[in-house]
Length: 386
Image (cartoon, rainbow, N blue to C red; front, side, top):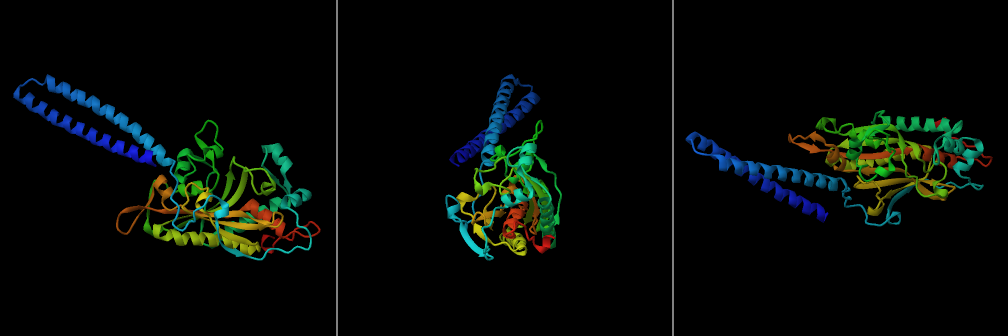
């Protein structure tokens, strides 16, 4: 931050010096005009004007380089955490807000979803590896069937709760990723399109937020609530171990994304609404979960000011696992993507943007399989998915 402040001061000083040179050149140019009218020689002052012009070109070139460096530093600055976000180093410092639903009480030892899926040939990881490599899966039979029904169930729920359904592209330009805050920090986690300065999206948040980049919205349009089925592509698959087996962490997965664009005074309430919109899916599916307010050290999102994680209980792991993240990005993305609205005062102001998952489809399918498993190895699928 100190380097950024120092560079800003250098730009300011250089700007003042350049403006002073321009003023001097203008004054001397006027003098040349007067002398010409009077028939006096102007060679000496003309040389001075030329020298000043060269100094101005040099200063402007130097200032342009400083501004490029300044912008690069700005791209690397994350959003500021909300005042209510607890300070902490990691997930152990997150704050539990509440728990919902009773934990299941099996009269047999529950198995993991990947064990069940492999035995029933619904989750084919071997063929996923053969087709695409490690951390890919082929869904078959009831695995594919109920994954599709979960997607439909989630999208319908979002539509019923006032979201406009969108079907965006699965790849986006570099500038779009800068707008939503994935670049420059997370470039190594993205799948780049060869010979093209574009990437596969890691989340539907990227295209949905940038739908309104470089636009000025009317106040009457706000809040905007958008949803999409988001195919997500991420190189980072986390550490190996039983907690990342099966559908919990993959290089390609689906989720239903929720995005809101609103006025600044609406965003705190909108965050609560997005959390509730994600919760309703878990409640209808009868899955126990808890809500966690993430601390400063565990907010992995570069753009977020405040994040709630919804964590669903996994019987095989005997622990809660994240199934949705809901975040208020305040005006951070809007500033980068230049999304504004014309306020009642007549001035253009930055909007606030928010996002959340409702829900991660693979993890939801895994949780349903584990909670609704029977002693004989079958799954008593919830009625709303039939």
